[in-house]
Image (cartoon, rainbow, N blue to C red; front, side):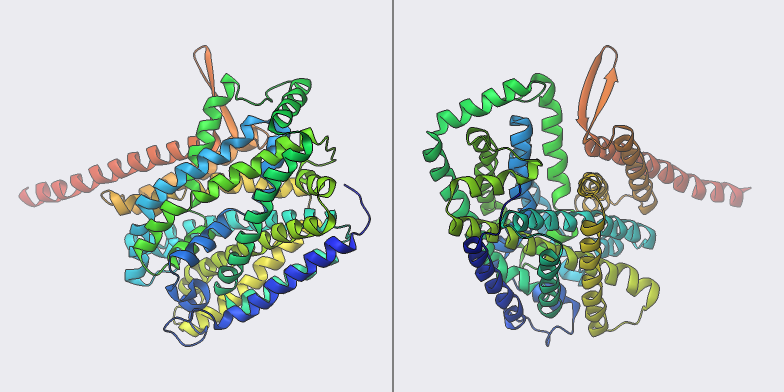
Length: 503
């Protein structure tokens, strides 16, 4: 998608980018909690645990529905058709899970002053090994996720006609500075602007674009013709062989979504459990928006958009059908949509490093102010690492790692969640399940060429299922088996002691 510099679009883009930069630095004085300044990890990393329903709604929506979502979902729909809509049932299934699980997790964190999921795991199981496993998984799974936000920003910067790495690097340096200064308050405040802009862009697009193309009938007919010409498993509806992988991808993604450090950071920042329940009720409004965003992939076929990379579909569609000023507004919305989740992700990763590595293994007597200082520095390192990742490694590598990241973070589900509802499993059993799930799932994904689904052959039939969900099933089975074995060993030991005493 090569083009000349569009000064009008660039001017509009720059205006809104400067606006959110000012808001980012101003956020350090907004929604102050009880602690003084940001000399406490609760203040810097969780916004003082003081966010109400509306702030939490925008923050969680802002870091869950990312810039890369706006770019990647239409790109996937453009490429494969109906299969790309798996994100819709996924984001419907996730909210009942949030409603049932997250208030209990928030309560455990609030009661004992936990900042991360790994904190909660250690508080429940008193196992440093299991805590470290959850923390490492969270950090490693988050890094490629931040890189994907950079990819989304890189796509729209290129659509403006800007070339080279300097604009992307400058944008991320600004992000790093105001996140360092204001912590979680910065993305929470910017999320208001980002979400309103995204809603405007999408609502305008789903009305104006079909009008320019001849209506939705033409849109769907053009997409159908394009998929028919392409052949294979593409189409406006799912093929029978796609139903099971579609369903398991949706379920597995829903279970994994709120295990990520950035989504849990938004949850832990809420001021009470009712705030989380209300958000679980109202956040599906974003799913409606996501469905409309996905339709842009069909519209690109009707507009006869031709791109070198599917990720360029949305910017190319806006450049083709809208005036420059609106394209600049849309690209600003997408770029700002990268800043919010990238900031929360870096904060989530920094919280994990500080609380679950630095404090237990480096400085057990670190003060609250010391924790905040370490987290601030680590958040800068994380952002710089993601930037280097994008500038010097192929984009496909980031996509592949993000696929593995989803598989990996899903394996923390038993350790984080099971103790909230069931009789406590032995920490050794949970650690064994995690290790088998991580190793087995990674091996399957690698053997399949880093595809998200694995084909199981049973008798004369074959079934394709999401690799991460398959690994989770094995994870849980191993954990239950090891727990049972340890329980039997524990019963036999007192009996042996009693028999020896009797003898």
